[in-house]
Amino acid sequence: MVTRADLKEAVYEYVRNLIEGKETEQVPNQETEGVAEDQPTAERDRSVPVFVPSRGDEPYLYSPQDPELAAQCSAVLDGLEYIERYAWDALERNRK
Image 1 (cartoon, rainbow, N blue to C red):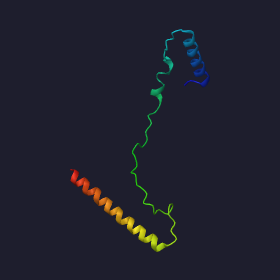
Image 2 (cartoon, one colour; image 1 turned 180 degrees about the vertical axis):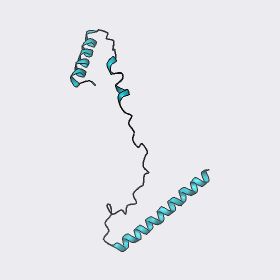
Image 3 (cartoon, one colour; image 1 turned 60 degrees about the vertical axis):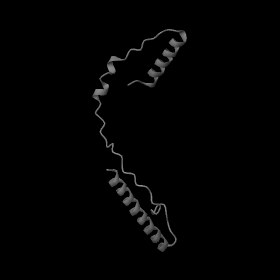
Image 4 (cartoon, rainbow, N blue to C red; image 1 turned 30 degrees about the vertical axis):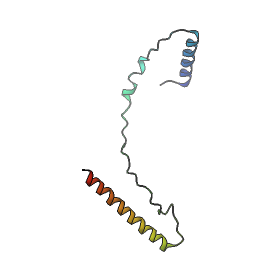
């Protein structure tokens, strides 16, 4: 690991050498090569959750004044969801 002060000094020295026209050769620090090997491998769940689009009638989005109208709208959305699922299944069957 390098401190901010060390990094700042290294950058200033590099810029100073560029301004003066000196060629500098960058040499890696041999002490830090094994540091990455000592670190445990990061293991985490990299799977992408399935995206579920909003229907618009979720309680956190929609608070209807008329419960009967809300029930009818939800029924229509249920029907549309069924039709969409059927259409995608038909497309997948035809694609194979």
